[in-house]
Amino acid sequence: MLKLQFYYCLLWIGFFIGTPVTSVAVEQVHLLGFVENICADEPYCFELRPEADYVALAGRSITVRFQQVTTIFDPENYELTLEQSDIIPGSHLRLLLTPDSDGVERNYRANYIWIGD
Image (cartoon, rainbow, N blue to C red; front, side, top):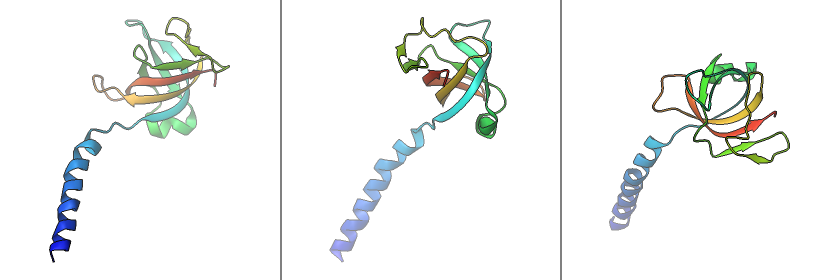
């Protein structure tokens, strides 16, 4: 009986330790799309039109901010700085995004950007 209580105790400890971690986890979104417009009022921001396969996941148009992006790659997989990125309307991108907690629905922050992928 004591052994069973020990296992229940471990189960509860695991539950309480694991719950806060899972509740603050942020779901990342992977998608491909085309840059429609560059944001007029802020640098390192663009409106993206996701490809048809990703519309159900992200919507027909989303706003992506990438000033805090950690990694940007060109078509040959060379890492670029923000200044070298040269993202323009019509650019085809593969992105790994996180929903923007400061923005409204359909706003994302880029974690990784692959240009011309």
